[in-house]
Amino acid sequence: MPQAGVILSVDVSGPQAPDRAALVEQTLERGFPLMVFPPSLEAFFRQECEADRLRHVTNSGLAAVLLFAGLLISDWLLTPETVGLAAALRLGVFAPMVLGGLWVLRRLRIPLLTEWGIALAGMLAILLTGVILLKADSRWALSRVVELNIIVVYTCTLARFWPAIAMAGWVVLVQAFLVCTLPDFTGVVGINASLLVLVVMAFTLFGNYTLERLERHAFLMAQRERALQDALEASHAQLAHLATTDALTDVANRRSAEAFLSQTWTHAQRRDLSVALIAIDVDHFKRYNDHHGHQAGDRCLQAVARALSSCSRRAGDLVARMGGEEFLLIMVDVDQRTALSVAQRLRDAVRGLAVPHGAPGCGPVVTVSVGVATARPGQSVALNDSLKQADEALYAAKGGGRNRVCTRLADGEMHCLDEAGLLPEGMPT
Image (cartoon, rainbow, N blue to C red):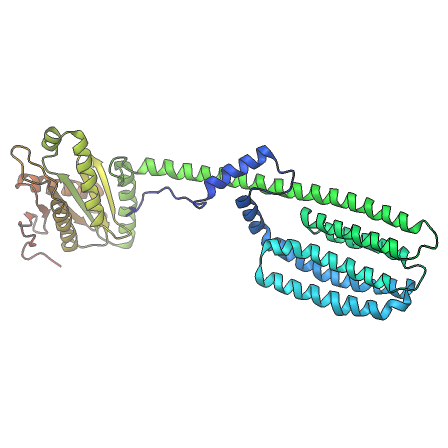
């Protein structure tokens, strides 16, 4: 359990972030001339852009409905015989299909479908325009082929590169069919209109390619910056963790405990709360090290630290290793009876580990001695005095035979819990 006052390292960017960061670097190095990232990065790119793209597509789609309907003016002026058909196709076919498509896109929220939906809307507009022109009897029908340029430019400025390429291929087919089908009384309108469409498509696709490349490059740079920021934050968190945590036992270190205790003491004094200091010392630890070796000693301390932490699960508690085999548990807003009860649980938890001791003159298993001091911070009660009382109680526990809990009661006498953990009689509640 993380202890209060100790900053732990947290992965803030998700389990896939390191892989994605490496993929971003590889993509920047290799480039993306085909306007496609590696699959996982491409999916993430579309997901990140989805909300803005959908909003932009919705606004542009609504505008496209109005603009396409506005071409009725051209129908009325140049090919008046097609006004009825044009109104039916522009208002009765294109508008409902685009509005319905926008509703579907907003409901499904599938980025790939959104991108190809833009191109399909442009293809539909081109197809309907071709149908209107084919039904025209006016000699100016072929000249209206230039209206396809408007659709091309509008759609390509909105679509991604590959959907725009697909739409451009569709435009070429429709354009070629119209030029070959509609009469050209001048003999030059058809070829000029075709050249104009090709030139417009070339420049528009080049602009589309350039804009998307800049967008994708900006995305990669933003991801690189985010990865660097995440790495920096993780590094800071790790350094903070190392600075406040004991490397061997993973509980708070002495420096962290002293800072936490100072803050806790001030807070308790301001709120008129009691503070309990529980000092713990592993019995005969030097003999254990000499008998079993330092590696076994390290494992012993780690097991003891875990046992102590398991007995202090409140958010405001802190277990710290003060040095060697000495630990300290800091608790706030607990009375002396509660503190002694917790101290007894600590003693029992360590003994319950049943870590074999077996050194000459020692018990069969590793145990701890515990000293408890409780105080209500005030002008007459200093922090150093409470720490001294906890140490005195600890020394009393060690001097009284170890593997016990001791404290100084209100009568000034030092009392220790018996082997069964019974509290002294007459203790105030």
